[in-house]
Amino acid sequence: MKDSQKGSTLIEQIVIISVVGLILPALAGIFFQTFLGPVEKSAQLATAQDVQLSGDWISRDLGAGPMGNNLGLSGSSPSLASVTIGSSPGYPGNNSLAITYHTWQSAGNTSADNRSITYRLEDMDPTDDDIQLVRREDDGSVVVVAKHIANAADVVFSGSAETNPGSAPTGLTMSITSTLEGSTSTVTRQANIVYSVPRSYQPGQPTAPASQPWNVIVPTYHEKGTGFWQVITTAGNGNIMATWNIQAPTQLQLYIYSGQPMGSGLGDSIINPVNVTAPVVASASSNTAFIWANTAAPQPAGNYTLYFFNNSNSTLNSNSADATYVSP
Image (cartoon, rainbow, N blue to C red; front, side, top):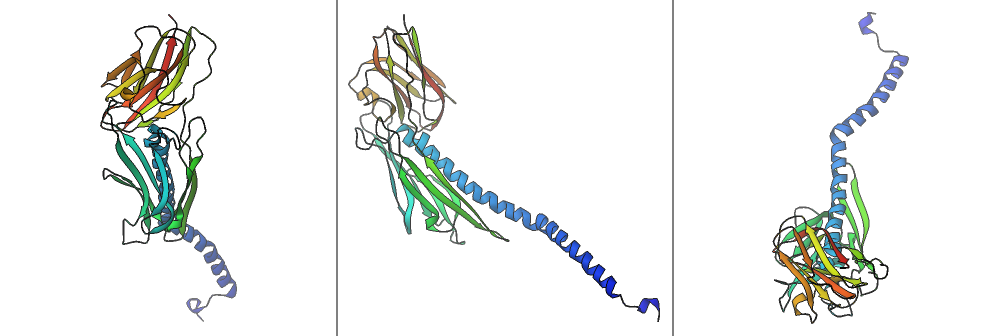
């Protein structure tokens, strides 16, 4: 028999099978990394982006945006900002969040404009099985903050973002699960995100010092037609100056009032500063990125209210604000 007609031996077949057994997993790994890996990675990024984006938007609106500028004072005066948890149209469950707040055309207006932001589930693309978490403003603007929600129960709001003067906020929780059907598996990301409306604070000061500084904790974002206030307490006669820095030129107003015309100690305000019955000891307006107000004469020891108002037509970003009392 010629060599070309010889068959392979059993040992040769075993060796071939063993080599193939070693090569196939490696080839499968290369195939996955080359063709399926990017799909899996893309799915992971998509679900992670859903969780991150929804958290960023709600954090902004509750902690620094409208609710940050218009702190909900439930059961007190005023009680003009609120958060309501409910069901999205057609989707049962606590998967809708409505934020109601107020703005003014200027700091001296006598009546407020009602504004609202709503987070709810909607089917923005009937061609697939996913539903979306959508942010809607009453001016018609729409932002899809989470694209891959498989079920209505995958978005749950609970708790409260409202705060009573002198007490800590209870906090609002959003639980969100984003799911994307990939070619190899189902990729899911879940997060529980807790938001608490920040409150400003006034550090303790020694008795009758030559000067006193305060770091005013203004919200990062100021919605148009909203303001922020903080009460300071001076320990002696002196001049008071307040400053406010933002990231870009816009229309700003800054007032220093004698007393506490906007209610209790510390926090945000939605009251018209010009309409309160309290003396204005200093005021300023500016169309720049920096504003300051300084009392023209020394003021006696006592409580004073600083009021920072965004009189522009757009949301602005705050950098910092501070106040200083200096004894003459």
